Length: 321
Image (tube, rainbow, N blue to C red; front, top):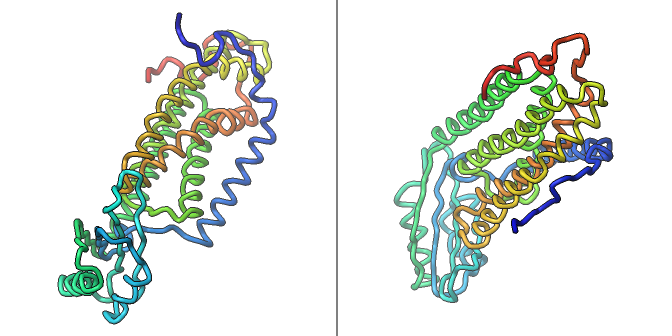
């Protein structure tokens, strides 16, 4: 007896709420852009340049005392945060100190790092420094440019692929859904001030790949059904297609979310931002495959001239994936 997440045959009207969901998506995208532009992202050292010092101690972390100990060094704006993790033991008290690169310097000097360590050891003799990472401003600027190019190139490549495999309306819908996913992910990172690092860019590219995979699966079924149900209204064909792929979507997304939640809880703070980005992306990506991509296709319409051959549901239907 096999387990079923959904019945074999479903007839749920997913497109019934299309106006509300599409409107909510537009509002969410605009709100994300406003938050992003007004609040900004909490860039990591990868993008800002500077040094991150990770400390560990048997004594509890006192952020105020740490800051008082470092103030005489004249380091400028120093960010000190306590790191919480359920896997830490009672004697594992971890903090992260971020020192931005000083004007005219490629990175924080070794002498400055030594002075920081000495000042904190006076405050807490049991403190240790398990990791120190430095990135120069020039390198960080190149990383930002490369990251933007990577995301843009992936979107352009996907746009071209979907246009070849389906009609141009499908391509516009797919890209709109991907842009929706990326902007909402950046928006939630800006709102919650989660550290935005190179790993987050990798997560964004992963989200793009995951989202387009789900969209293409539904588009494939939609294309088949457009040929099969030539006289059925487009909105009804979309509902049929989403219902027929619902079990596959829930199984794929559900199993992925189980693994991601386990990593989010037990994986440690080092990968937490990366995992959170993918977790959020899987949720909004599954949503956008139906309520953004399909809405765009529905608004643009599809050429369904009955006088055309039966395989005219797409311009390039014979191109393999």
